[in-house]
Image (cartoon, rainbow, N blue to C red; front, top):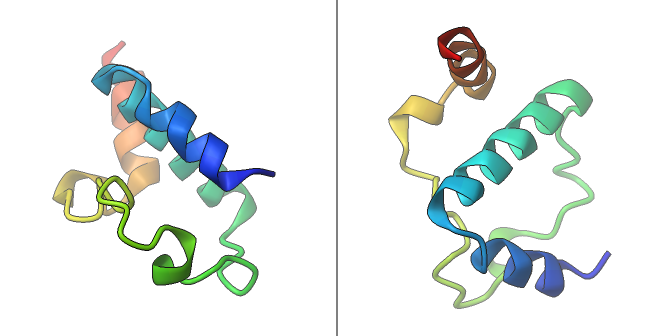
Length: 75
């Protein structure tokens, strides 16, 4: 997988679609677990990339599964 292309494609999306992509990633991580031992460290993954970690400080996403469940209930 070419992570640079994935990040570029994600950055090209409109804000609402970026949020949907982040939701889907949170869903997949909850479903499949985290492969933290296989993933590169943040500094290695996207050095100097300001887009990386965009949602890191969002308190409403601390429990991504609950957040997605809330979205599903609201629709």
